[in-house]
Image 1: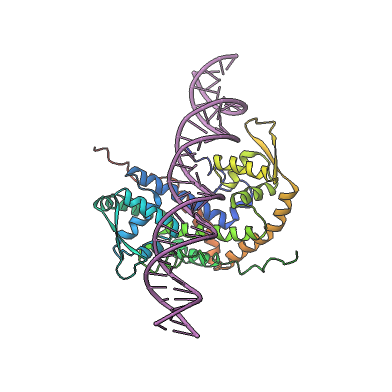
Image 2: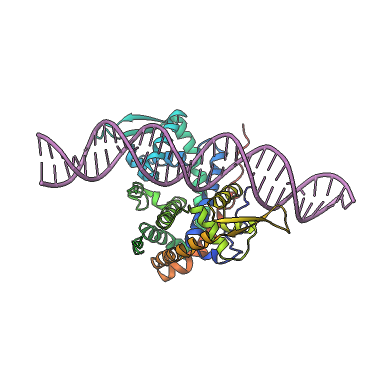
Length: 166
Length: 166
DNA sequence: CGAAAAAGGTTGACATGTCCACATTTTGAA
DNA sequence: TTCAAAATGTGGACATGTCAACCTTTTTCG
């Protein structure tokens, strides 16, 4: 196993590290990513960022590059590179966007649609598995809590500016 | 700003992506890391992984490499490289470990202690800031919820093994 | 209109994270 | 004791993520 990390980490055997919120979130995020990678690896060769993009496009809400990029929550640079990789691997095709010539449209190929059909049920099952691990009360407040934290994590206004004394 | 990502992301303007738990956690984790990096950058040149290691050592609970590595939740490879970088930068010194010759001891230098003294209050303030963004109920259940999710994220047993049909 | 600002995408440099193979030491069991 | 298994750290290869500079198109506003 490469699960070398978790022994102490999330169980907080050591000290008050178990009370550090950012640390716990990071560890959880790492585990979720690893779990997702496991599932992806069992059904093909899509990487996690590639899958995120395909998943967004598969909703069919828009094929505009900016919409997809922002929905997937990926930064411009990584998005550009990942889309190119998807195109090279035959998962998507791109076309110029009439209304905004800075953007472009992205369309799934049959290959991507097939991959999505195989993977979506598994990842949906995982989502249910995760939610089932929470109590009903936890399920209710987890999303608002995450949103509140994201808000609080967006700035460092709460700190006075560093001393200008040298 | 490079805050190009968050516009749609966490506010979920688009579709049901706002209901995807792993996605939300990942986004939150990303924001928290960015916020931490901002604070670190204002007070020196420590990287986030470097700071994590110093913080653990500063608790004084143990100087054994394995304990520190697991407490910091960093994998073996990255830990090895980061500790070397810390040593090169004069933040830590290492010494052989008598009882277990595979491990080694890590000790903070004055430079690291000074950096810790400057940074710890700021990061503590952030922790308070984050917790203050939650309601008392949310504060109470956030840690158990994270723990439950981490548990559920540790395996993919909930999926039946992939079909062996080809 | 026309210039400045903003948004979009690309690229390169670099940091961070993951995975694997290896050598050494320790542990555990035959 | 002795040998296999496990744990530890290291290093290399590679994936992912971040940041900044740049060019083009669109939007904003005087």
